[in-house]
Length: 394
Image (cartoon, rainbow, N blue to C red):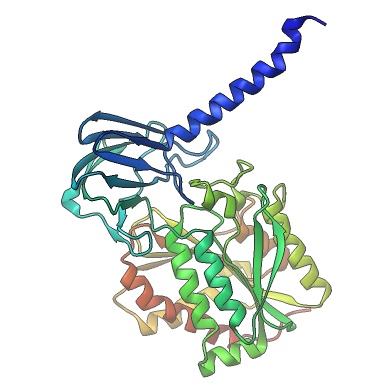
């Protein structure tokens, strides 16, 4: 055999290993004064280069070229070897600066970076951040880090609830488990779905509080659970969250465009769950899919139009009317839309079951305190309207 042919596989392996090593190195850099590190769950950093003692340029790109909306997640930690100020240039060569940086000194408690510490440049495409750091380190992230560890803790809490049973319904592309928390079987069910798009953290924060209200020990919540089974899937895209993706899973697919085709194991896991519920005679009555939006309203609800004749009928109209009676000084938008050609969750669950199927969006920069103040109102009014609904049509 030609010795050059024999050497080619070895050379190819060496090149692959070299490329992988370079990729890891790009998520970490340092000089004599500062360390930049994105090697954590949810971390993202494509290139890192110090220009001077206290100036560094960081480059971020979408996870792959097929991302339809060109924005990039970013998440890294800055540590000073001696306390000081660092100037950070964040570059998004294939995208734009969608997110205002969030800052944390412990990775748990977050706040928006101060207005005077951030400057948007190049017509909003890039930004500069001035940050004072010490040897304890400071996290900088597009949104709060809500990673697998957070969901593991939440599932422990859900499993401790007397009415909840948690199970694994499938695995992601990279083998991470997809969990569902469900109450006892009932003839009618409600599906709550979250984190199809990894970067849409505000929707995840609202979903957790929404679920807490629905599982609460109030008379309303108990009556609701007496009638409806709950299927709760908070983290449908664990690979995307772990890898710091903007929108896709590890299969380079937008999961919210895979309902019907079911090319990905994550969406197939939910399809199998729903098929099992169908066999048990559990009829879906409502689906809420939690997301986040770059739009300015604090909340946006994409629903069916009244002419679509959902079952229960006019759910969204009655839901928003109930909310409106209780809060008049909070910005939210009800945006009814007829079915489109997109293979998203909203279109699939409406076309498959004829039920209200709603995309529940929270604004990227929504005041978190306001979101937490008013989310219970949306949860309570949802339960009230669903309890007033007639029996499912056969």
